[in-house]
Image 1: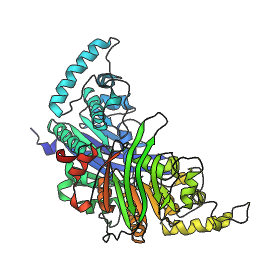
Image 2: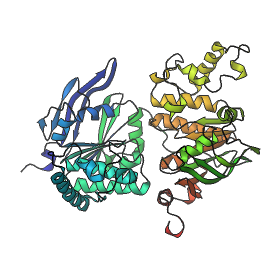
Image 3: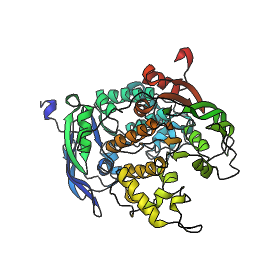
Image 4: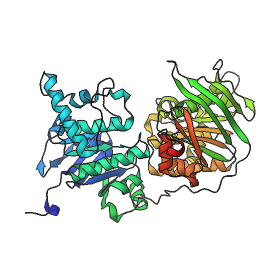
Length: 515
């Protein structure tokens, strides 16, 4: 009998190429994924990872190349072909019907026949078995919208296993999980691996790659540049392979020198248009020369905290900026007033609230500040030449690539779009900068740049309120950390006096002796 080393790989891609017009997304990709292993795929934004997995799962058809499953050439024209080949995919944004039960979601599209009762009975029995085998216990009669994100992700995995997937592709699976939920997911993946399943893990988190994978493939600019055994590499080496140069993974900063209180909030509350209380009495202070990081799983009030302080939504309570009370009522243009009061805001969703993608970079750099004196030709007209020249300087200083202010915002990668927003907000020299998810969807080279700029602003004596779901970012940048859960601040910690486990418990609403 041939040894494991001689066995056909679970997946082999040979010479895969895919172009979208003039853009070569994948170029002659070769990769082998061994059976019963966890194989990581990493790369910068636009490196071609998602395109490659979309080809494997049948969303795209390769221009050239060959797919082999268990050593056999396999045609995958659509997702049904992929499912029949034993491939399942767990997407970053779950594909669940929220008002269906777990059981209904699992069998949806795989009912077997028009009689649902036998399908449900079979599925219920199989779910019980899968829960025992893989730590995937979820109440089959629970409605999906009532489940936490960790359990929703388990439903996605159960869907794939119900369809008898032997190969699982997971795209950024921990983006919405607490540390405890992420650890549980990794235990599930190890259990799947021990049962002979093959896992492909797409993630930008090098810590996760080092913790859970057996091998890792690195993509850069549409090409596969390396495949290495995880035990024989390091985060520093992987980062360099991804970017093509040395990258500082740790934030370099001196101790904070906090000064006067810039922003103070007491009993800050927000109720949405449906009458749901999103902020339930927030108390916090932010001082000059410090970064206050807000940790928490997305959806626990962090977005509303930034938006009410930026004047985008109404709230109640007492909030002062440098001793001056802020109007929380939205009876006037509060967002403009905040900018005039020296508050900068990097919205967590740059596409929805940070940029107009059809407008050019130089226009985006002026948005919200177009009434500034330096942009005015006279009382009626803006000085477009002055705006353009100002934009050129900001683009150069923030290393926006390509350095062309005449390109539309949608022409830039996610990282460079984020640099445009940061350049606009930081270079107005605000006393208070509100920053939401500063490196969401941003590659590792741009992350290093953005972190440096935020530390420079702190060291200039500015106050920064940072919201991020990335705990590594919270630990690296913050001078103090506040944890939010269900619209409340559960506790405040100093980064050097806490750890991921303690913060993870606070993020799950566990406090006091239990934490």
